[in-house]
Length: 303
Image (cartoon, rainbow, N blue to C red):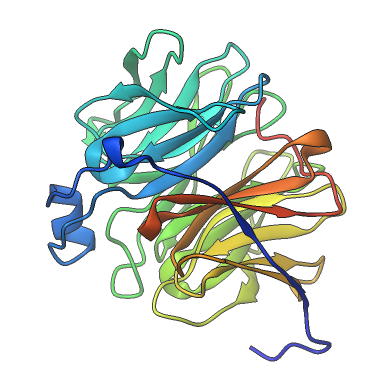
C-alpha cells in the first residue's frame, strides 16, 4: 500500500487481559483447523457493549462468552459446545452469536442460556458463520465464512429480515468476515480476509445488491477482520496480521493507523465509553483488550 499523505499514527493501551484462572492451554478442534494444532489458551473475539457499559467478548476455541464489567472484573457468562465468534446485541437484550460450529444463536446474558436462532438454511448447515450486525430496522446481516478463500470463493453474506426472511446477498466471497453498515444503511462493507480487501455492497431499494466492488486493498499473511463505522463516514477495520486498526476515509484511503501495543493478531473492535469515542480492540493471541481514543463518535451496533 502507498499512503499519500502518510496516515495519522495513534497508539493503544491495554484495557484488560483475560485472567489466568480462565485460560485453558489445550488443543481443540478449532486450533487443529486454524492454528496447525497449536495449544491455544484463548482466542478473544466479538467485542460488544450493553447499555450498562459491560463489555462482552467471545473465546472461540473453548466455546465461552465473558462479561467484562466497567471495573475490569471478568465473569464467565456461558460455556457450551460451540465456537462463538461475533456478537451483536438485540433490542430485547439478548446477545446474538455468530457461531462457526452451531450457526446463529442467541444468549440470555442474565441466565447464560444459549438457544438456536438459525442453524440451517434449506436443510443445509452453514459453512461457518463468522460475524454479524443489526440494522436500525431490526434486520440482521451476517457472514458465512467457513474455510473459503481464493481457492474456494464461495463464502456468503446473508440478511435475516426482522420478519424472518433469509436473503443471500453474496455467494462468491473469498472468506467474508467482519461487517459495517454506513450511517445511512445503504451500503454494507464486508471484510474479505483471504482477498486481503474490504468489499463495498450497495444495498438497493428492492432488497438486493449490484456493482459490488473492492473498497480498499491490503497485504499480509492474514487480512481484514472485524469492522465498525463512525459518524463521519469512516470505516475502521482490524487487520489480523498487521497488528493495527486502519481507519478508511470515504474513498477507502487510509487516514489513520491505530497500532497494537501488544501482539499483531488484531481481530475486532467496538466503540464504547463516553459518547462512543473510545475503541476497544481484541488482540486475540495474547488474550488482551486494547483501548484507543478516537475523535469521532462511533455508530451504535444495536438495533
